Length: 361
Ligand SMILES: Nc1ncnc2c1ncn2[C@@H]1O[C@H](COP(=O)(O)OP(=O)(O)OP(=O)(O)O)[C@@H](O)[C@H]1O
Image 1 (cartoon, rainbow, N blue to C red):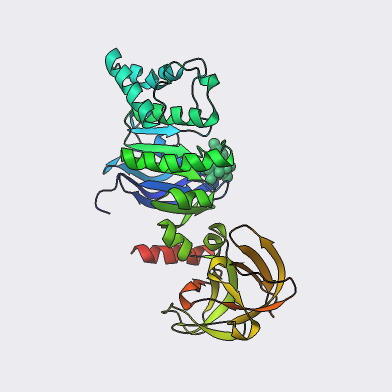
Image 2: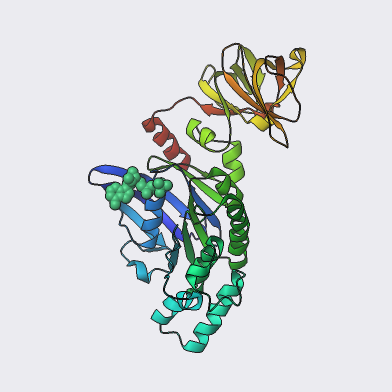
């Protein structure tokens, strides 16, 4: 990356002797939508708080536009944060909430008024200046929190699970709005969520975290199509994960047979896990399938059926198909060679770290 706006260099964080971030390295490119995605406790918020300046690394350096920033106080960083509970002042009206930071900066009254109006227009709440915060809906509060943040013209906006308090429908609407807003403003967004669907829908780039590490970074399509290990495959979307071995380049063995695949470069007999997404599988009659399963359940979901079954080794399979079957039926499964994704089998942490390091070199 030519000129990253933020760079983490070998950042670690311990609370007492407890490591919560382990050797974090990444670069953030200006003007893009980034998401930190991982389960509760994986370290997402700690990274966000370090960028904001509310938390110090135990070791390593953070750079902002090529200069060290980890010793700069939070209020001097060109960064704003939107918290899960929005942190709006309930005793101030909409306009006063948005104007708060601008008054601290001693901006003149006419400019503040114009800036408040402009920020409200950006979040499509023009004319809401005099509304009380307590009289707003959840989605409107969310937008006012965004308006307040963007009024300060930050270079980076940090968003810590900002949609988690909203109901399902509003959350979907706000996802579309957030994405559109980020593209309109061109500000770098760094968004924290544990919701993989949300991460896939919003981001230019996702960092998948677990246990204080970034396991994989990439575009949503990269991460969905080529998960680096079992955890990522399982966490991002639904997956069928089956043990196998490589027979040769472009040939993988599982379920007592060799299957054509698109992966090469591993040694023969290397143990692997294969991943096939449910939507890449379909059912057919027994004789025409690449492998055979007995159907255990079938759920109609409007657009398709979610079918589960097991093979002769008792591996569970999930298939999303527009074709209907019956529970107890023996059916064939079909899939294409490029729908088989291959992962190295169950590495320990040390081997995994060594391999990540070798990619970076
Ligand atoms: N001030 C603190 N003192 C001690 N431990 C802490 C502190 N803050 C966070 N931790 C621990 O650090 C780990 C990472 O926490 P963090 O909040 O970054 O995770 P997260 O991925 O954002 O989780 P969540 O989705 O639940 O917010 C957790 O195990 C947490 O208990």
